Image (cartoon, rainbow, N blue to C red; front, side):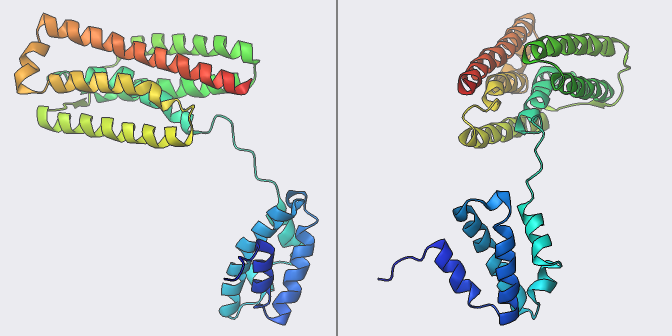
Length: 274
């Protein structure tokens, strides 16, 4: 059995399939890429060449020269390929979705537990706008202060957001009412919970310190309360004083679960940074 070719040997075999004109261009391109700091490691360079060569061969089969395919001289193309990737904003990540889900769990879903109580579309829109402003302000502050001051900055933003949302709940008129009915509401809430759970499972497999698990307890507690308020056997109980007490206790437990699990995840992240 023939030995498996190395990447460099594969690249050489692919190069032999180029026309003489394209070989000359390719050799100049490889020489120029070697001058790029990004490809100071030979193995990294060979892996990059292995990605480039098949595309060039496809272009050659379409009667395109290497010069036509790349649209510039080898030195210019090498500079473009070797340019360092733009740094991704540290705040631009999947973590940004977690506060949005917490907003849904803390503001929207509790208001949707009882099917007879409609969601106020206008109020939700205003509160979500306040939430976006608070998030943007918090991120802006966090990027300009020390790590110790970030916690204080976020606490100030969160307290201001809570006050602003409380004021909005009392002055925004009840318009754009949305009713989550017994059947339709149950399906909507259950599908939402399953989708978020699937997203959490997917993200946690890739990032062991994912923030998403922090919301699962609150998500399913609130969903269970909403389903109990819609099932025929338990819907009557949920509109009584005992049901209201159950909803209150469930809401407190749901919020506490976010804090407890979130604190554990934060500790894991802090230990990883040490």
